[in-house]
Image (cartoon, rainbow, N blue to C red; front, side):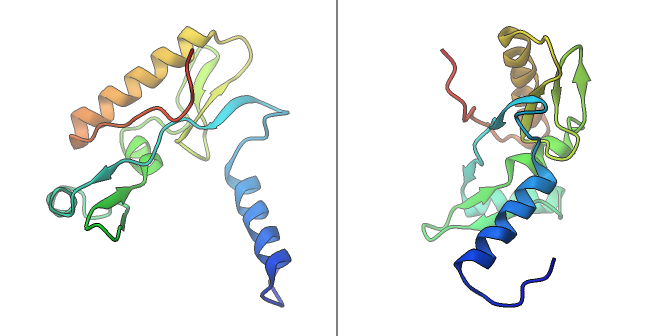
Length: 134
C-alpha cells in the first residue's frame, strides 16, 4: 500500500500499518505494549558507546543528550523472541514483553528484571520500566 497523497489520513494509515507489522495484537497475545522507556544519556556517553557498538541507535535531543532505542539495546542482549514458560519477549519487537498464556505477573516482572540487568551489564545503561506495576 503506497502513499499517493500526504495528508493526515495517509500518515495515520502508515503509522497503523507499521505498528500492526511490529507489535502483537493484545486480542491475540497478552502484552502491555512497550514495557521499557527509551533511556536518555549524555552525548559524551553516546559517543563512548559508538566506539564499542557502532550500530547503536540513538536520537539527538535539543539539550545535547541522546535518546537510545531501548528495543535495540534489548535485542542486542539476545532477548528478542526469548521465551521462558509463558513469559517472553516478542519475536518482532524486543521492547514488548508478552504472556503466552498463563505467565504470572511475577514471572513477567522477573523477566523484566533479567532484561534490565543484562542491558546494564552489556552497555552500562539503566533501563526503566514504562508500565505501572502495583
